[in-house]
Image (tube, rainbow, N blue to C red; front, side, top):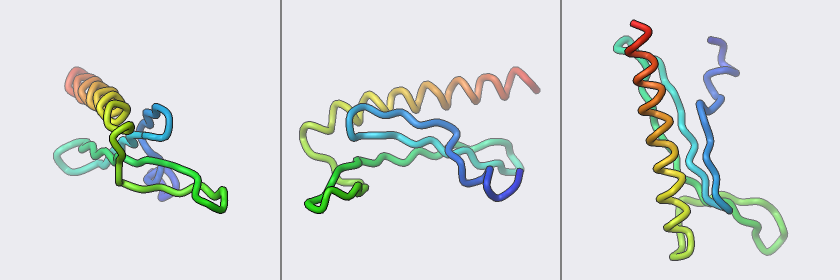
Length: 84
């Protein structure tokens, strides 16, 4: 795996401006997954920005994208175990 492949997310799930980004890291014990939760928005200059701060209206979307990320990770781990 070269350095450009290491920086690519394993998966992204997005609802409106909220997204969960799943990262896969190879370790000596196998794959480990981490998830980053991000809200994207346009600032006053119409430039895209990212934050980890969520408003009330973002919470349900966050729950849903995190559920999708969780399901993805479970699926990947199941596939890895069955390939052993």
